[in-house]
Length: 129
Image (cartoon, rainbow, N blue to C red; front, side):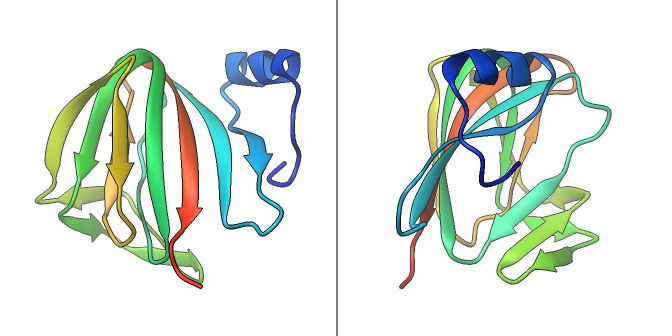
């Protein structure tokens, strides 16, 4: 579903099922907006993007955001995209509704909502030409 845009009603249904949905994508693919729902997931995943900054706007719920450090068991599933099973040496901060977080490109990060439900918008911004 990565290139599909959804109506508000469809987004509510997808969010209820815990599926990430794309709200908007620019013509140039320089930025896009996703709605993410994490509802007590069994596991968490760390990531880092070489050429994308993330902006999170938390809409409801609470959780934790880990920033910095190094990826644990890193993989590169696609060019410029790094994943890991966790972060070592990261700073951890609580997330709650109303929070706005800017994560620069090249910054390892991880959202933990295993104890709660967390719904947030992610604006992805390509930072290089």
